[in-house]
Image 1 (tube, rainbow, N blue to C red):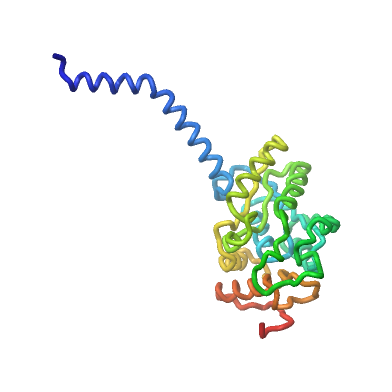
Image 2: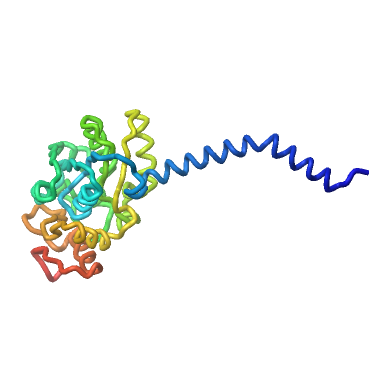
Length: 266
């Protein structure tokens, strides 16, 4: 009778010879997929030579700091500010002023008629209450997908390799379009639509709002010039959900809040 150990060894070698190439190819495919997923949120040092970026900016600290991060990494940044019919009157002025101060090219688009299809949100509908805490009424339906799509069109036109926005970890719970899953699916969609390797990024996707503010200080962003308020007012109301989040983030970060609020007792 043959040695059973020799028989077992022969069977194992046969399995390796037969199935080994398939396993190798499968692992290669999986590695490529994982590599593509990592590329969506990869750190600056591994991006390569993508030197031109479009960043959506609203005038708030999150988006301005995202643009400043890209500028710090060596990108030629075009700041894209889009009026989608929001009530906030301070956003555009802040976005334009900060873009000039920080060395971004500034592009403004008046698409305010979008409010006709976004009437369920209090950010564009004056008849709805702007709440002091998160509620569905402050969600602008599909906003980031719409605005990022416009950003992709601009990136395509100016041969930019990156389109970015200011999503961060503190937004993850309440806003589906501020999650890495959204970025991954949107990345696939625009590559299919454009056949261009345009990366979609949120430089601060893993950082809390407080951490974003601290990073802004490191980058030299004048935080007091950013504008967060949802209301149609010249200065921050101090009462809406966005103003309250702003106050809380400054407090958590241990940064003196130089913002002027209408109601500092809120």
